[in-house]
Length: 426
Image 1 (cartoon, rainbow, N blue to C red):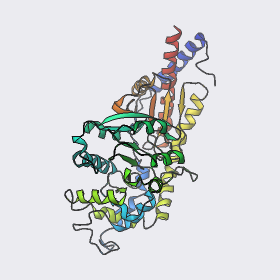
Image 2 (image 1 turned 180 degrees about the horizontal axis):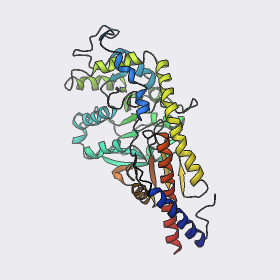
Image 3 (image 1 turned 135 degrees about the vertical axis):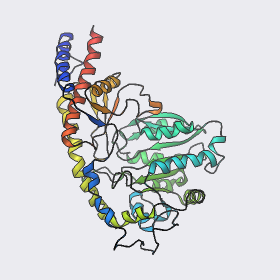
């Protein structure tokens, strides 16, 4: 397809009129679609409906150790789920804390504890300045935690291999840099997986701050769309080799495996960090929802059953991702106005449109009935310096709806680019 950049002024104006007519047609169709968040669709959640038959009635309430899961106790979770999560997270089961339904809640709580009680040093609240490295584009809720606690966020550019490690290694020389957010596999929103070299360099870091912590949010650890999905190097093993195992705290959950509102989250860390976290938990809770944990333990008695379950998710998700990518290829390829990722898993596709055009694309989509993640949300403080990045979340709508949304999005991208290019010509 012809490059919009290389068109003559007359060709651009003619194309603008053509695309505008296309946009008017789409706008008048009365579409109402929401692709703002990466929520599982109804069809995905239906895959897990049997979980409600696995506890109570004739199945009983006791786990493999004989614990009655209706009662108090079990501060750090059921042993069955510790063993299951150990295979997902790549650490010994003794290093895992199994909690409630939200890994975000565990992350928030970990930062809150650092603010009030520190990590082997004085509380962050009592230190003059607290900063966090934020690979961008990234997960808006990570950034929201920092903003809530008044932690200064330092954007770090993401590359195809993960965060720019040259930049990271320079920034951690500052003692006020206390940590770093990471979504290492099928990152939100770009869908990239950190390379082995990036993981090794991260594990080898010797930050100036003694209380530095990498917040390793491995939310999409087993969320492959294809059998040849990405492989992520085990960072904990690499940290042990470097004597830096206390620098990392890992998180994951079943939120996009079973139910977002009724899954199970887990936190993993070095023995020293786990001991510290569990000691603080004794003042916070008598124990998690063990009945829900028991449901999950019975639903996934071993890792092979869990992997087969995730293949069912992939069958549902794959056509939705491919619908977006096919439309991008058909409508945007060769025009030099957008570049996009082609992830092998996770929940998002990231597209960078012509610089300065993302907000206009969002506006055009909204007027045509398509809601997108707010432009800027994938950057600290909600500010995309290039006004270019758009996060696509194709999981919730049906395939038919995703195709319609992709048509609207591509048309908006073309229209916004042509408006800018013709304005420059004039």
